[in-house]
Image (cartoon, rainbow, N blue to C red; front, top):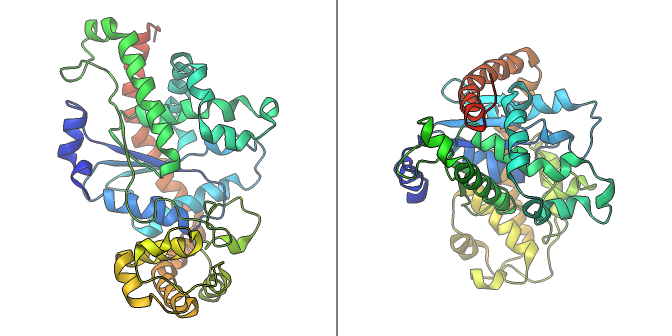
Length: 361
């Protein structure tokens, strides 16, 4: 943890607010190495120092594809990955988003707070909508407001995200600031302000760190590793067995040059840079140390070492995931308990929001 990620620092960034971590993963199938290194490993680490709420964001899952016959199975798979990796659902909260109606309630308020211009600038919407913007769902356009609600319905102060999600946390900050400003007099009158600034919502801080916050495709080092890539060889799935992992790393795209001996030599070589980054994230070693061991050598030797490391690290997680998925009643019980505990927190915040806005309740 860096100094910026400690509870004390969170208090400085949001004086008066209780430090709290919130983050989530969509249940869209094929959880892969990028999800594990870029999110889940960080979730596990942060629970040692923070109060944490981790969510399977199933409401987000239907923005691009409404009808999903395997959605329940995929919700359980993401939950199983959380638990298999080491997230403790008793000390912290693990739940699926649709169990807590306050997410959707606050999202509607934020639809009326956020500005169209803010959403029009969201790069992920542009990427996902492509050239057919007029034919995508309203949900796909407005889902950043739901993300803001996910964070702020618990008044979370920290959000571990990948670089590509930083813009969404910035939108949550803007939305919180506008709400605090628009309702400043009513917040003060009701005695609901926090700290010297007297705002109701904190300014959530994006946490972006580590060597693998953006794991790239094994087939194209310029593209992010993705569940939606049609080639299964582009990613290492968390449930892949040892033989499959070995085959995928053997076939991973590289260039004809040997590995460089210095990090600077990775510039302009996205596939080599990606594989070294994956090794660094799995091992905890620095890229400099890795290149000192494998630089000037052929990729085949390095790929074999990377395969052995990945099998050693991911094998136990994949095995535990499969065991948990085979016990859906246990997973459902974890989600039910987490949902009930999350609802208690969210209901208090949403009741205060209703009082601030002026709704009767």
